[in-house]
Image 1 (tube, rainbow, N blue to C red):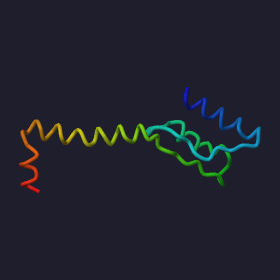
Image 2: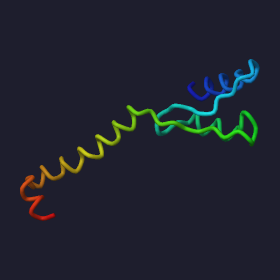
Image 3: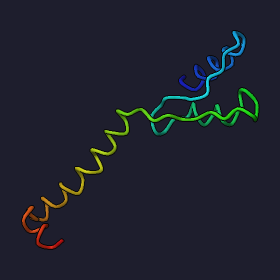
Image 4: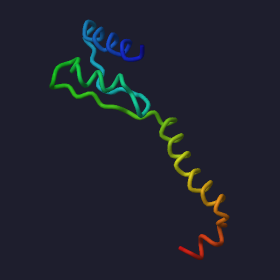
Length: 85
């Protein structure tokens, strides 16, 4: 549904003399891939993908929490890690 809606909006925008140049989406946007594949505005116009800051922060937080969780399972403390480094 998201892909069909994006294509419809982007194609309709030319009828009013407007062109979108960037798409704000999450990391696995099928709409972005489809818009680039179809070349809605021709091969001269490049569509850029802007990452949603909430999705970026969520992925970063998960990436940081995972090593901490692994260290806690192993019983490594903050003091022991600073001595090793």
